[in-house]
Image (cartoon, rainbow, N blue to C red):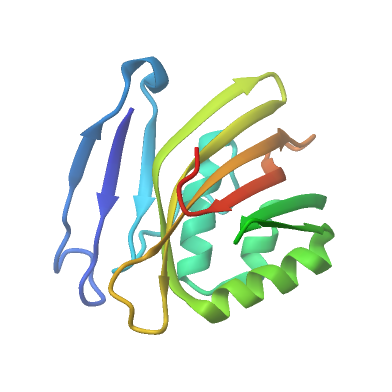
Length: 174
């Protein structure tokens, strides 16, 4: 898999674009491209919905970095579940209302985020996606807060893929 990282300075993508290619394990690749959206700016997605499992994480990063909570919520099933492991405790939220509250709190604490080393494993209408997440806090801290996500996504009747179960671990434990 090739991971392409775009960074922007200024309002025009042509002002400054840095391009970085990393070759990941060929067994994971299947010729797919993962888009990593960095903290210096985001690249608008081709689609506003994910029609392949691997499109969800770039959309998540884009909507988060654009501070678009309503669009971010469209990526989750109505009864989706998010489990977060932090400080040796597990928090679980279920459904759009609880997820909205959780994501609003996350947006209040973090200026931007990026996903690196994305992967996907698909079987029919289910897929496992994930990657390493780096969240950049508003507090001016230079280093991002790391985390890992392991996410079950499901194809909907209209062909879109949505988050069904999101398991997020702060720090790197896997």
